Length: 412
Image: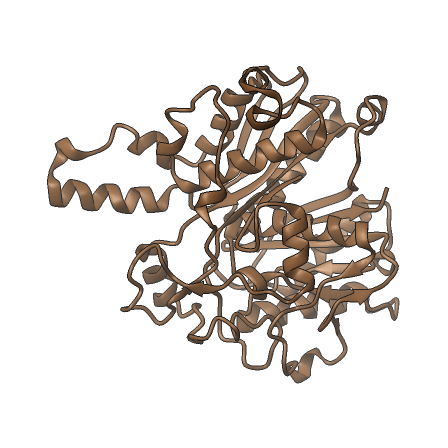
């Protein structure tokens, strides 16, 4: 796996941030947020985003941030997998030019793509004239460019798929990769999600929808599941994984972090933007069944929970329905309090956290959960690091338009 997020640029830094209760939320630095209700964000430290010499080394720095973050995470994932020799800093520039083995593909989830590039391009054209428009504008903003740059730089000649399913995009992309490997169409795949939309138009749009948190102290917001939750804090990030047919991975002696055993996705919402407990229950149940499990086998849920009033409640209602006949209460956690809401990267970052939980046999806490909403009393929400036996974790990601997606990841 490869990760970059407000808590750091490795899975270990992500885990350390989650388990020590560190917040990656801080005042916005990418623009002046003074006119907005929310002036906070979960920003990535761009100084860590570096690339070894290799294909597209001129073009890559001129791409939108979501492209650069996806490529960075993908290269870290390839290094971690051993599928390709480490690039530049460890093995010389020649390794960066060596193509990946055949049989692979790229499956990436992106929600809003290069929205900051679109906004900046429009303003530059209107203020400075058409001739000042960058020739990199269009390649930088189209959503498929993250998958494309990964494929072109790594010499991957199999299919590349970009999924634009709002906040479920990353999990949907992972699911498509799983299905491709199961079918025999691919032996391995690079899959995950990336998003970077900390820009005025994002804040303007979400403020108009009244979904931005009004809390101004980064140590108190966002507040998943808390009684005083009042909305999201915009974050950014990428999490990308090398998925591989198990026998192929074992034959080459790969270190395996976990097994994706179940996936399901469906449609259904209360309205254009609302979460439907009934359809979310169906989605989770489908992923659990696809894994060959029953609901009481789920040990932990890495929830969508973003701090939105209705969404958090609907997700826990769905979880109650899923386990109603079992008496089982899986531990529930949300990483959004640590790093904000990163749209297409939400689900993949949840997966990275779940893999670390399986490794360490512990569940990270839900940050800023001071007073649980009374209707959540029957849910077992982690408030501090919880050491426990973990075999199967459920990952949720749900998007506007009634797009629901869930994954099950299991201990190998």
